Length: 521
Image 1: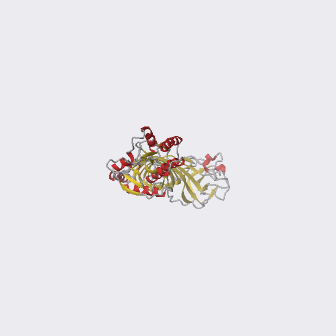
Image 2: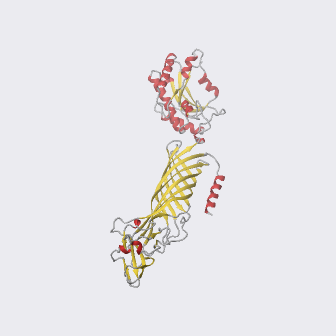
Image 3: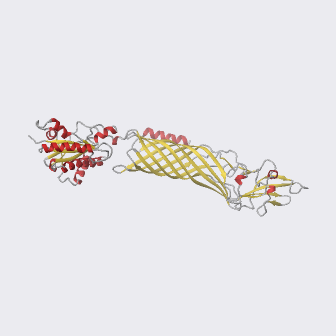
C-alpha cells in the first residue's frame, strides 16, 4: 500500500509539472554518520537490553532530470553499511539464569546417577551486527540558486529507497582478558540442592562449568549470518549547492533514512542460547567450558520481533550537468526588427548591439555603470535611439582616397584567451600595424569594441569586454597615438563573430573589433 501511494504521487507530479528550463545531472555522493538497526528487546529479566547504532556510511551514483529550473526527480544506485551493537548490560544475575535444559551426570557420584539443570548467565554481553545494502533511491528534488551569478543555492530531496541486504552478519565481542568474563555456565543439581560452577564457585572445566571471557572461540555459531529481508525506507536530504563551474556543483548537506518495513526474516523465535543435543558433560572432555552450546543471535531470539533501519549524518557530492546548458545561458540570437542602441559621447558615437535577452533597460543600466566606474572615462554618458542611416553615416563611410588594403588592416580584430584581457604577442603585432596607419593618416579616429564569448553572466562580460577594449587603447596611446583619437566600448557577448555553439567558435568571439571614423565630407 505504501509503495503504491508513493509511486502514484511521483507519477502525478511528473504529469502536472510544465517544462521550462529542462536539465539532467549525474551525481556522485557519499555520506557518513550513525547507521544501524533499531529494535526493542522485551522480556529480558537477566540484563539491561540496549540497541546502539554505530558509525557507518553510504555512497552512490544518481541521475536527475529537472522539469523546470527548480523541480525534478532522480533515480540511482548505491551502497550503504549499517552497524549496530546489541547489548545485554549488567553483571551476572543470581536470580535469573537462563535454563537450557536437563542432563544426566554420571561423573559427580559414580554410585549414583544425578540429573542436573544446565544454566547460563551473561555479563555485559555485546553482539556486533553489520549489514551492507544495495540501494535504489527514487526522490523528488527541489533546488534554488541565489545571487547574480548563482554561485550558491539550496537543495532538498525527498523520496524512498529500496534496500537489498547482502553480507549481513553478527559476531560476539569477547572480553579483553580473563579477568573480564562474559559468560557463566553452571549445573544445578536439584536433588542435592547444589550448583556447581556457579558465581561463587571455582571453575570445574572437566565438567564444563565455570566462567569464560572469550565465548566467540567456544560457542557454536558465535559468528554467523543475520536473516534479513528487503527493506523500503523513507529518505530525505538537504543542504547547500556551491557552483564550481558552469557544469559542476558541489553539494554539502545532511541526510536521514528511516526504514518502513520489518526486515527480520526469521519466522520462529529462538532462545538466545541452545543446549547441545547430546550430553553436555561428555562434550566437555577437553575441559572447554561452554563447548556444544549454540548461540542464536539477539535478532533471531525470542526477545526481538521487529527490526528496522535508521541512518543519518552528513553528505557531500559532485553534481555534473549533462547535455546543453540552460536556455538562459545560451547565446542570444540577432533580431532584425530591433533598432540598434547607441551610447553617445561628445563628437563621437559608440555602437552597442542589443538583443532579446536580457531586457534592454537592464543592459543599458549595466553599461552605464561600467563606463561611469572606469577610471579613465570622464565624459558624460548619454543614451538615445538612432536609425540605420545614422549608423551608416558614422561607421560605414570613408573616402575613396584610402587604399582598401590599408583600411582592411584598421578593421582587423585581435583575440584574447578565456577570461583574460592581456594582449597576446600576435595582437601586439596587429596593433603595431594599426599604429603605422594612424600615424600615416592623423585625421582618422578609431573606435575599439571589446567582445566576449557567452561564458559568464552579463554584467561580468560587459566589464571584461570593456577591459579588453581598454588594454588595446592604452597600448596605442603608449605608442604615441593621441587619446582623443580613440574611443572604447563593449558589446560583451551580444555581437558574436561565430555562434557560441562550441569552444572553437568561442575563441573567435573573445576579441576586440576596430571601426575607424573618417572625416565627414
